[in-house]
Image 1 (cartoon, rainbow, N blue to C red):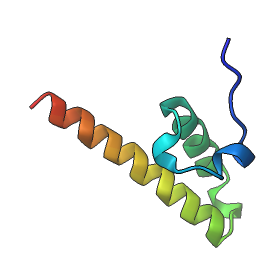
Image 2: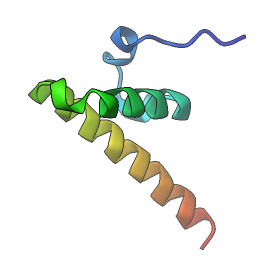
Image 3: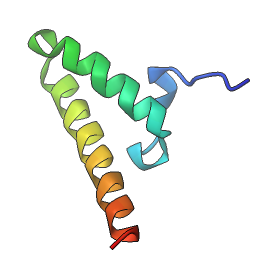
Image 4: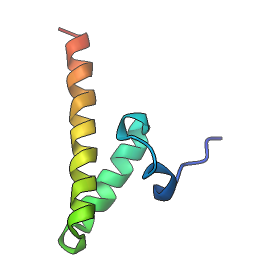
Length: 64
C-alpha cells in the first residue's frame, strides 16, 4: 500500500514530480479554503493548477 506524502514533503519538490492524486487532493483542499489563504497559498494553488493544465495538454497531444 502506498503511503501518501504530506504537504511538507511535497513543498520541497517540483510540482512536476507530484503524483496526479496529490495534485488533485491539494488543488481541491486549497480551493475549499481559498477565501482564507494568503498570497503564498494562492501562488501554490496557481502552480498546482498550471501543472494539472500542463499534464492535460500533454495527454491531449498524445491523442491528436
